[in-house]
Image (cartoon, rainbow, N blue to C red; front, side):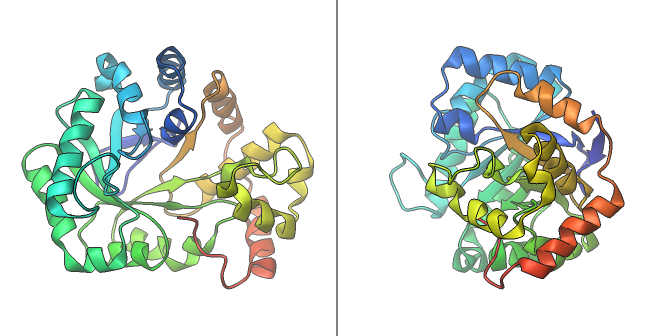
Length: 297
């Protein structure tokens, strides 16, 4: 699988990464999680991304600790799920980081990210200071921000972060003009989240999860022709679109279904999305997108 240097970091990351949210959301059994993670690593993925608020995701990912040397481990902090104290407070953040390391069965992560941190907290600076301290103590190699909108732009312009994780997809393109050029100019690594827009079109019906409704409504308006074909081909086009976007280094995809990683690897083996196909998707977005179609948090 193709690998790209993650901005100015020393990490050569696979263009496809494992997103751990669904492991927690679906309460995947440990045996299933182990199989999914092994399949991902065997398929050539070398990025695993999770967060302290994704249910049992961190603990399940800790199950592949014996393979720790074969992948880069990313997590996020900030929401204080299950911890005493207020979210974003320095003591709470420090406790969250220590808990993440215990759950993940490691002494350090490769990337520690603030998770959708409010702008006021970013501007205050004490949360960023906690990440900087964790780096000095060897608990993380790099620090990043995960989020969208004005907060993401502030994080890019601040110069405090090595990476940005943000929404980039066929249904979420605001960042392509608003944020990614500035991130590239500063040499930041960019991690695309929700690169297939949660496959919200897949069943042809409004998704059950409210979290997917925004993408469903946008895609109904965008009416991309390729969504009328097979689901696999459409997923391939969507994923290759995200990875063809200038400045994007890796795309994080989540699943709780064994076999998905081999399928995605085969889709990427088709090669880069043709330039005319990429331009057509961008042109349709510019034609249809409303001003309030901002990045999904």
